[in-house]
Length: 285
Image (cartoon, rainbow, N blue to C red; front, side, top):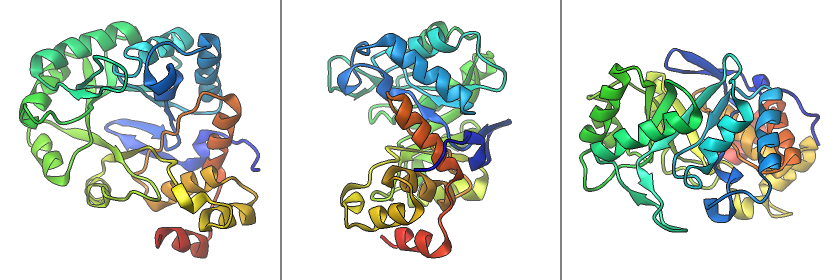
């Protein structure tokens, strides 16, 4: 096991005119089971958030659909007044009418209401990074992004990001407003967004991989991830995070957890370095 270091060991990435440490924190799992309802222990959830900041995390990602609304409220309760330099990113465009449901709603009227709700729950006057959570097949992405640009002009949003987009959808969004980040699923076993990552690298956008710790059979006791972890005296999860951080300077990795021990383990991965052979082994998988 590595000793715990600060998130700053991973270096920084630009999110528009903001610079944040590339090891952030995803606050989705701080809610109840299946991202629904209140956590079993609210104080423990808030303690994880405070410890993340103590460890140098200065980028926290959430969404109005986590709970729904629970994650945003916990962040404000735990961290207000927010320390200088802490960037809170949230998302809108998915609604939760019932457990397990994640329904797109990126209509302009809904997004206006969503932004106002997030401002209220996070207790801020301006959201550092507001991300369109998903493209709504009923609504052209241009219409969804245009309303976020209007809210940006009103001073309610500092920067706009998009999530779960293709290269073509990203290009369409960028024709409407400056986009500073993309949040797509990406990990050792799912690299379908490789082309989107390449655009982010080329154009200086932050790439925020969700579900970063998925490793499946690669983490089995005799799998390549486990073997490399044993050689480095680290955990498979730490190696998976280290691979992401070394994969691209555009990466802004946001592992989430409900446990302090796992949080410290994740942050320690910021100081883990794979040698060329270890990185190549994982990169070929």
